[in-house]
Image 1 (cartoon, rainbow, N blue to C red):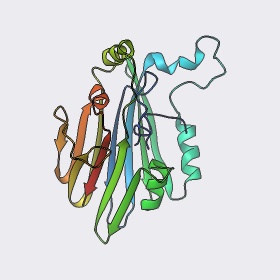
Image 2: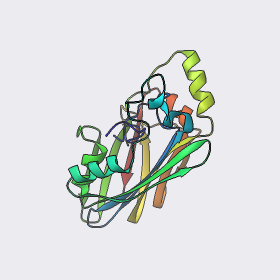
Image 3: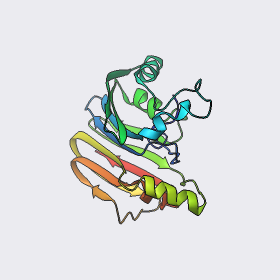
Image 4: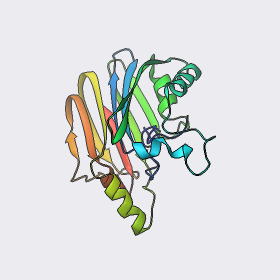
Length: 218
């Protein structure tokens, strides 16, 4: 599948290519079950202008953005233990809003989807407790000031968020890519509870110069 900040800032959740041609906003929710199965719900927004990108400048033969249901189903067919539960698209004038729900039979299938490289995410589970460690972003891409101003203008109303829930209480820990504690002053964080979450503006992601790593303990 092609990028959709989509594959969580590579969806590999998650390791993002925050560019002008990326999604305007994305949220991901992971529900972990006692037996290691899980459900992932991904909602992402695309600027309407980007949906027609492939139709411009003689590029009619190029695929348009974003990825459609057929591509999601193709991925589900490829990964053993992954199932496409639902896919929907909503036109909100400014944006197209896509919502995808995926079920995974076990940790291996979830990790294969999130991290095909096997280098950015790991789940260690013992009985009903475990650790889910995700490197979302090594370092944000660097652009010139004009590009950053454009991205800031276009993404000012959009957020990136990720949430996690389990049958028992969970905790959320934020670190940078080097494993140091991360200070995210503008973020909204729920660090403990049955459902924990992290949400921040798209531009705030660019300000995390040392990357972003999220650790869920349950």
